[in-house]
Image 1 (cartoon, rainbow, N blue to C red):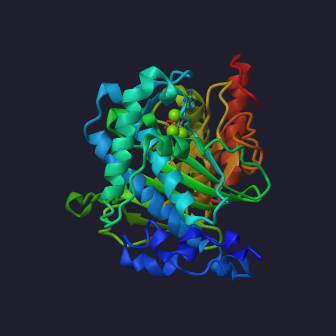
Image 2: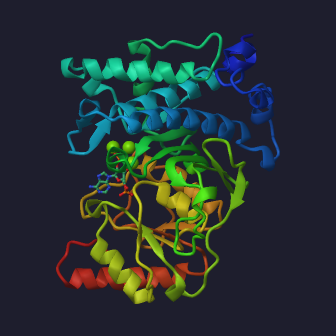
Length: 400
Ligand SMILES: Nc1ncnc2c1ncn2[C@@H]1O[C@H](COP(=O)(O)O)[C@@H](O)[C@H]1OP(=O)(O)O
Ligand SMILES: [Mg+2]
Ligand SMILES: [Mg+2]
Ligand SMILES: [Mg+2]
């Protein structure tokens, strides 16, 4: 009988776990026999291993992204067919996370739904970019200071990137990755996020958001100004039933439990939205704020860093109303959604339905995504409906 086939590689051969030898504190986690997960494990333990490997994989990718952002060259950015940018760091982050998770999970079980693929890199004009990505991936792996640091060939890098072609769905487990969310913010030298989630039977059960440029201090209107104490770079992590934590990427601040703002009066609320006006209709969000009586200016941040900021109380409301015709992808919301939910908040579409991650690579949403605490949600939903009606009457193609 070949029981061994069902066991993860790190269990068969402890030294084959990539992360285990790089951080002594992680050894016990990574070497826990997998049967603990497969058997009827207590709810408190559920997905603990998955959250641990996700956290480490995202931290690794953040390191690569930070290095690239410091010295981004024009030659390291391409334009995709939808005119959005993609950089060596998007590909490098996807390759690293895909490779690391595949190393840690039982052979043959890894399914990944991710934003990028290697089509452009396989063309003649992509050759130098692939060289650079491979170099970056290997430099980042070498920083883990393993004696036997792995070296990935160009072919292995392409393979790792292309593992992200899964269609996801409602059956089984699927990892969901946006290797750089908010690439425009990344290229601008601003906010971006490395966003990794895990779906189990269509439900998000684990989420990790690495936000390398987000200050560890609060940045909302009630932020205490204490620049000397703030460092830059936050890592948010959540797993089903266990709450949301934030820690600093540089390790100077240990994980702390966080929760959304506990606010009942909408006029005291503030909201966050996209930095890029092309990503969300700011006339609609301004109208919603006006109906609610919100007076604070919007907190405009690129990427799912908004969800992280909201989960720790920087903003009480999140609003996202893409222009008609835009289709939302699951990797743009999976990690952020569980990070908000486990911090006590709600994430709904503009009609008041929970987001459904079980339909494949896209979210089936007509009009927008909103988030706030449970007390404020009824007033927010009413304001959203009123604002959309008004837009509709003004002749904009808004779906109701
Ligand atoms: N036209 C668009 N409308 C809405 N979102 C977009 C559009 N183009 C790209 N995006 C995606 O929106 C997200 C950024 O959102 P935000 O506006 O919150 O910063 C990213 O996932 C970005 O993709 P990408 O991951 O390639 O950066
Ligand atoms: Mg993109
Ligand atoms: Mg994205
Ligand atoms: Mg992206």
